[in-house]
Image (cartoon, rainbow, N blue to C red; front, top):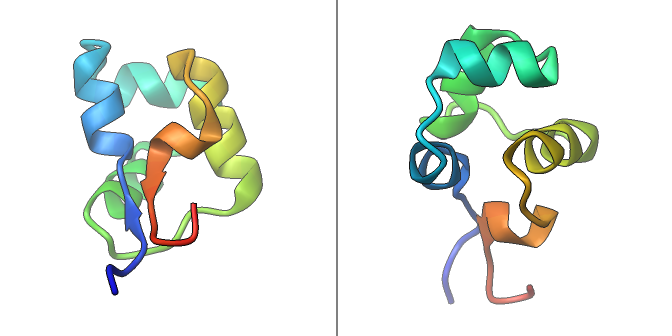
Length: 68
């Protein structure tokens, strides 16, 4: 079984955005975004929604799970 994996780094870099730019688009601090991307903290559903909206993707595009 595969564990839950957050894919915000991949989605952000595919859009060519820096952490600073994503911070400006989402209102989520750059440190928090970096910690999410590095798996140090789990994003809230609201944070995933804000990130998805800023990147123009679905929330489900931002994570991988066997239960997706």
